[in-house]
Image (cartoon, rainbow, N blue to C red; front, top):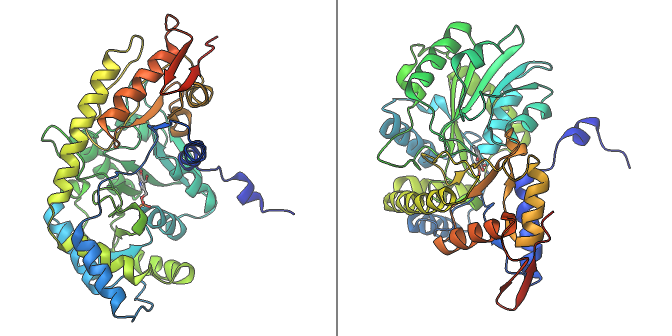
Length: 405
Ligand SMILES: Cc1ncc(COP(=O)(O)O)c(C=O)c1O
């Protein structure tokens, strides 16, 4: 059976692949530690659950307007004002089935075949694949070794006549880096001058540590017209631990939104009304769960960084946000895919190879699980990699052998 050339070229999601590998091992009763997860495990806010349950009880579950239900779009408008001090209207908002779909629909809307999208490394694995899925060309920009964000000259050197957009994700998956204010300011100004779309994926915007905030692009935008090419993507997945609800949104100008509405109307029609109602419940409800999650993650970040700092040969830049870090394991292996597989096979620890994020030699480690998972996971990684470790250890009555070359 033949599949399209495009489908053949789209890569499997490495994070979902690792999740599946961990699930299968757990099903077999293996004591797997998951440091590859991309979702917090905290409970969904009660306001989301109650709103969703009340809607379900009406037994009146229908299509909604493609742009989203008014209670949700109103909540997003308020969120945007409170979080960015930016006043927007309904004509600027469109709701999607997750931030991932928001990015896909946006690319569908703005990219012509061969248009280039600049994506600084390390980047979220889906950006290049989605750009390819709309026949665009991802231009991957690798900052100088040892840095997790580009300079302006890294960006400008890659801008050419086909450049249509730059995509920035800060706080960043997979590094946890928060991009400096000066860089964001210069980038907004540059993109506006050059009429290039600047897409800010703010999905981790609320999960920042040490009393910092992620500098928002709106602070620097001078172009408030319908030709403004600044687009902000966000959603409920990370800040409310609502990954399974699949609700995200785009803030953009009226013209792009209208075109995006046609794209969305012809693929999903609208996200489920139940899930939109839940997202509205979360945004309109008590916000304490967001701060509790942030504090929990900051504490876990500290544990993870301390464990890694005590790990000979590993280089770690402490993350300022998200629930990921991206330590440099090149002292042990330059091949992160092989290394991640080795750690899964021998130590039963799930990590995600940095190669998938454009950072070979690194591993993405998540700290959204328990402190016990973090400490035990790192201890097992150390055991597996340290040439002086015993060749065998027991986890309960399960024997692990590392056979390190
Ligand atoms: C940077 C980034 N953007 C978007 C998403 C997807 O979010 P959603 O669950 O809303 O589709 C993720 C999920 O891992 C992400 O890391």
